[in-house]
Length: 72
Image 1: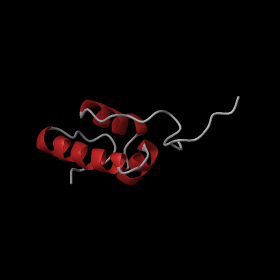
Image 2: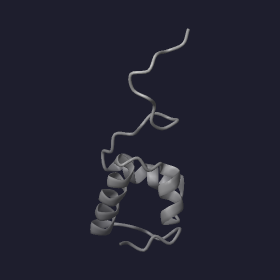
Image 3: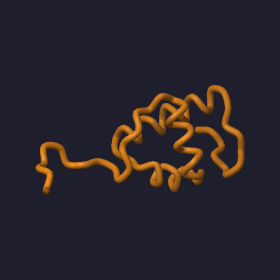
C-alpha cells in the first residue's frame, strides 16, 4: 500500500491502487470518516480520491432503511 503519511503525495499506480481499495471499502459500507481515520488521511483527501475514481457517493447521513414509510 502507498505511504499514507499525512501530507505525502500519492500518485500514479499507488493512487490507482489506493482508490480501488478505498472504493471497495466504501461500497462495502465504510464511511469516509472511518476510511480517513484508518488511513491517517483527511476527510477531504478520501472524498477526493473516491470522487476522482468515479465512486457513487452516498447521501449525507449514510445508509437509510429501504421500503420504510415516511411520516407526515
